[in-house]
Image (cartoon, rainbow, N blue to C red; front, top):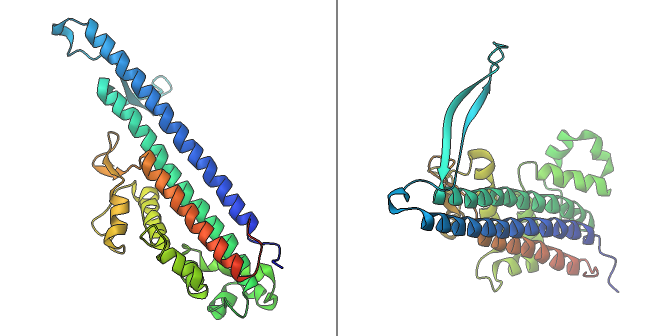
Length: 284
């Protein structure tokens, strides 16, 4: 008879987080759609009322400048620097960009949530498969980094810490180990009805997140060289010119985020289900 499933809670935690991210993406997108529609109608009505000679005058707009704190002069505590402005359609386009920028943060949050899931799942999987399916291959280096754990081999916290150490940069090595240990997981990721490898898709998401966090969303000349062509296209499909930046950056649309959330959750479900069956555990 199947055993209680130790992987249930990590999956539930992940799905709860992804559900909140999905809600934020959809709500932000719909709110932006409404704001833009109202703005467009307001703009059309205002332009219709203007005489032809005045139609070049902006109807909607915003402008600002940077107020620099001046700690050297109590009588002139601030001074202005530069200015930015947007009018009419540019203002509405800026609204859309704010949505996309929020989506970029949601992409990063999705990646971080998945990494957290993999850490927790991996620690439990190593404990369940200790000495058989999953082995501590970097034992000497791990014990050197954490000598106090050397005498705790066989305990859950030992494997949890090992996976945390293995994933100190990212989960690439862990996913490779899980893929090698569980052939069903590997096969379903590589040969699903999607037509592409789910783990490779996640690597593209990871690359996009890295560029968003560490390079302002800009793609450098060699930034995507480690990816296959189709993976690069996953990232470049999200690139758009920004009004608040010079050049093009990664700005995911609502559709991009829907795909990412679906596929990341699908990868988690594939891992959960195949490994649970392998260890004869109940499926949610």
